[in-house]
Every structure is written in structure tokens, then in C-alpha cells.
Image (cartoon, rainbow, N blue to C red; front, side, top):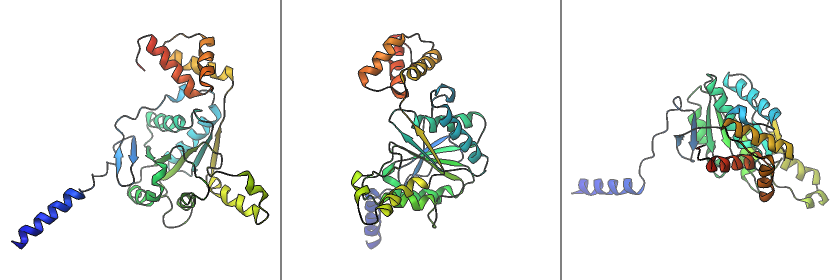
Length: 271
């Protein structure tokens, strides 16, 4: 009777806390996602064609070269991609990885949400079990005043037993150049004001490569539209493309792509 009762208790506990799903094969997929507990394969990794990214030639070439070095096992930097929204930061990361994979390089992307930074030591332990190079991608990261996770990330980037393994580099995008928010009042603090500023800049300084993505002018925006449209065999009117951007209050690669999606829909095409 006691054995039966114990079995029932064990079964009830399993239903309350089911076993973790198995980790994905780290050698089999081009991209993965980390949820804080498990690393799973991304079913459809389809980054933008590297050649289609225009108006950011210097940034994408610098990221490509750094990523190529990492894929070859050579010295490479952790990278901070910062700047205005919609300017191609995230697309460039995925596109570079896809471009290298298309050229035969064995490198993979692992996407991680910013709110799971405290779980990265566990992810690093998993990735240490392979020699495959990985890009750990944290998108749209930013810390508010007093956020403790900023110091956590600093320790992961450099120093300590929890630091990232040699086969992993962190690529982080942020709308803020220094990731951590800054206040004008800190400049007026008469007590150790330099220390306050330096502490906030210390996180961005951990990235060996910092790439700025800036708002584009009208001509550059139209050229981006032209490139996307040509790739999809679509025709467009530059003035209509400009009006589309004006209505949205922004000129960016994202807005250009949204306009081309509209064109494709009107033409009855898929994208």
C-alpha cells in the first residue's frame, strides 16, 4: 500500500513539474532560441539577403569581418550595434550569420531575450560542450536607472567563472549608445560625478566593436526601396515611396521594406 501511495505522489509531482524538454542538437541547425531553461532550434531561419542591406555598408562589412574571424576560430569582438529604431541593426546580425552559413562557414545564431540575462551562465555551460562557434544575439537591450542586470552583463562579457566561453561572442542591439540610460542631472552631481558617468559607460566599453546605425536621408531611403523592389521584380514611384515614409514620420530600412511589402501585396506577390 505504501509503494502504491509513493508512486501516485511521484506521478502527481511529475504532472506539476514535467521534465524539461531535451536540448536541441547544437550541431544540426543554423539558429536557436534560449528561453532561460532550454535551447531550442528555430524552425525557419530566413534572414534578409546580405546584398539587399543598403545604406549601412560600413557597418555590415565590419560585422561580417568580425563574424568571419569568429567562425574561423580567430580572435573576434563582442559587438554592440546601437542607433535609431528600424535602421537595420537586428537584420544585419541575422543576415551576416546567414551569409557566412551560405558560404560554408559552420557558425550558428542563438537568440536570447533581455529578461533572461541571469540565466546565461547556464546557457554558457551548455555551449561549452561544443566547439562550434556561436553568436549569442540579444536584441533591443536597454537598462533603466539602477538596473542590476547591467552589472550582470558586464561580468558575463569579461572576467569571472561565468564569463562567456571562447566559442561564443555576444552581439547586442540597443537604441542607446551606452545601453544604460543617462540623466542630465548626473553631470551636476558634485560628489564623484565622474565615477557616476564612468560606471554607466563601463558596460558599453566591454564591447570591442561598437557600430552606430543612424537615420538616413531621403536619397538613401529611396535607394533602399529601389533595391528591395528590384529583388522582387516590382516597379515603384519614388514620390509614392517618400509619401509612405512621410506618413509614418520616419525614413528607415524598416519603413522601406514595409512599403515594398505593400507594393508586393498590390501586385499579388508573396514576399
